[in-house]
Image (tube, rainbow, N blue to C red; front, side, top):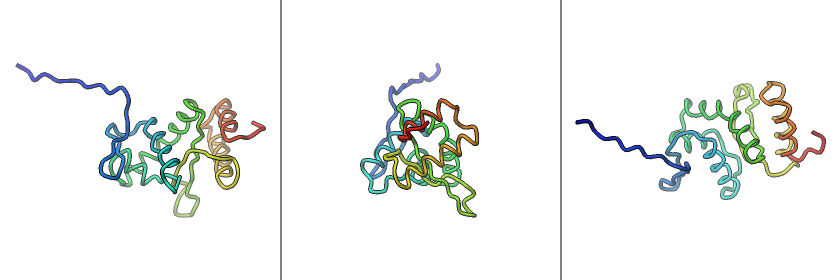
Length: 150
């Protein structure tokens, strides 16, 4: 006689609150990235989410390996948010000599003026130069940040 396995399928993944912190019980999921970023936008005074914070939330621990996993998936998260809901994900890169251009933080785009608008335009140019965006996605990204001349 074998042991019967019970398969449980979840319809919608969500972040679970453990103590004062939110955690993903399913690991990395783009819909959970979106949920966590909207939480930063509405509940936190610092609307930027660092790679450290995202690693803790999605993988349960802030380690170099988990930060690397988060950074490697940000391009997919960017495209997911843009295509699914027209939301622009602003990504901040570390341009210091020791930073090597790694992703430091990310947030949901709020307004077209100031530093955030400059980050967004720089990011679109960077992603276009690296052929990470199709022309349609580039135009959609420019519209999402409020550029009148896509």
